[in-house]
Amino acid sequence: MILDASRGIKIFAALLLISLAMLAQRRGFRGSGSPRAEFPVKSEYHFLRVEYTDLPQFHRGFGFSSRGGRGDGWWMMDWPDAEEHFSTGVQRLTRIDTGAPIHMRLTDPRLFQYPWMYATQTGWWGLTEAEILSLREYLLRGGYLVVDDFWGPEQWEIFRETMDRVLPGRAITDLSEGDPVMHVLYDIQDKDRTFIPGSRHLRRGAGGRTVIEQPPGTSPAWRAMFDDKNHMIVAVNFNTDVADAWEFADVPEYPEAMTTLAYRYGINYLIYALTH
Amino acid sequence: MFERVTPEQVGAAPSDPAPESAESLEYEIVLSKRQLAIWLFLGTMVIGAASAGAYFVGRATPQTVVVQSNSASSPVATSAANTPASPPVSQSPAPEPAAQPAVIRGQQVLVYQEPVPGATYVQLGALDKGMARVMAEGLRALGYEAIVAPGPNERVFRVLIGPAKDAANLKRLKDGMDELGLSSFVRSYDAPK
Image 1: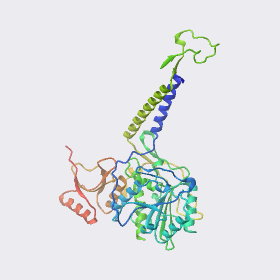
Image 2: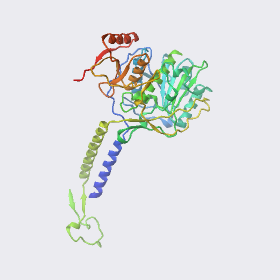
Image 3: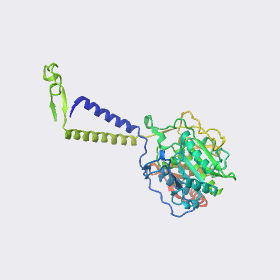
Image 4: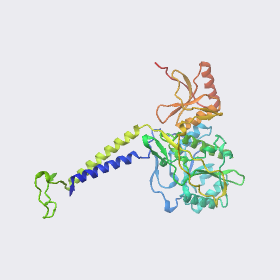
């Protein structure tokens, strides 16, 4: 093979520069230096993450779900770091007897032993009829669901249509500052109904500054569904990513104010669920 | 590995003018497959070393954070059948909220503080930054002078109350935490030498 010497050097130099430029724009966070949290196996409260079926066209294949987890399916995004950090927060900031986070299928009959559960990426779920029935029964029997980290009009439609199958005709309402869940433990104000960024919304800007970029065409919305007694049964975090704030709570680059807010939302949801 | 070739050797047209001197000859690299593989390997190694260098430089670079504030749309009750996706919002950078003091009982309080050298505090925990702030603000709401202080590394922050004015004050602070059911211990900071 014959290469022109100067051309080869130019190509190599270009590759080197591109590689350096890409590294300078890296979005990831450094690996966790925090020791893994330890929790009792049996406790009053366990963070329950629900496993669901993905829409076939959006199915997530095998890969990293967080710095500490790998697997396939959208249900596991941010697992296990997010729930470990949040559960530590519940342990330290409340008197709730908090145990090890768990996850199980939406159709698992043990679901009914846990009054509070979390589902992520619900703009890409494609629940089977069995999952729809199980979720309906769970919510109508007093269970509380938090959904999080789904974005844009298309994902909203998927979520809305799914919830209309679960609880037909039931309203999805924007939370207001006057709702009890906003004050059950921490006072969450109107200004706090803001955008909590995911790690993918952070980038390193000029001078090493971390810059938050809200996805174009999205606006944070904090919504809810209520039962016939006007008890909140579904917390809807739309166009915002509470779990990433939990997941990266120990990362210096992640904005502290957002972590603080995410703990407050999560703990308020939990206290509300346990007391209503 | 390097070989000087004439235009004829690389297929130049016979009508091309012949080089007048050695200086006007073009130099080209002729590589065997093995040599090409070696060069590619060396190139990869150099790029890898440069990438690693850039990574460590990036790690060592101090950072500040710019957060944009976006207010949510006003509350509107809608049905599941017609709740719209939220409209687009404009993006505008704003100062980082972490730098803003907390508002406790109507007063602005700087929660993040360096401990006073030589002073004694009661430590409530060594936590991540967000959790530490929530705890400190909660304690301030109860009337304690709580601060979030740097911890042993950049991931861990200490929640402290104090500084204690004297031994009796220190005991009152410690007893107060015990009454709240919060585990705590006394931490003294060295006086400047």
